[in-house]
Structures are given as structure tokens and as C-alpha cells.
Image (cartoon, rainbow, N blue to C red; front, side, top):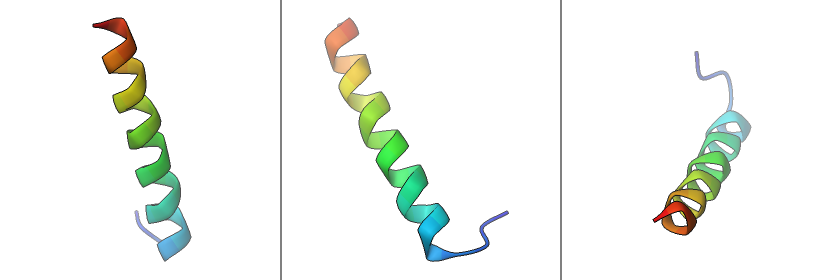
Amino acid sequence: RLKSSRDLEKTNGVIEQRGEMQEIER
């Protein structure tokens, strides 16, 4: 359900934030 490149940018930002959170949890 990708409608625009903006959605990709948002998802990429969320993934990056999740990665940082996982690192903190470790």
C-alpha cells in the first residue's frame, strides 16, 4: 500500500527509530 515516496520516507524513519530502541533495549 505504498502511495508515495513520502510514505517510504516515513517508514524508513520509523524503522531507524525502532533500530535505535532495540539497541537501547540490548
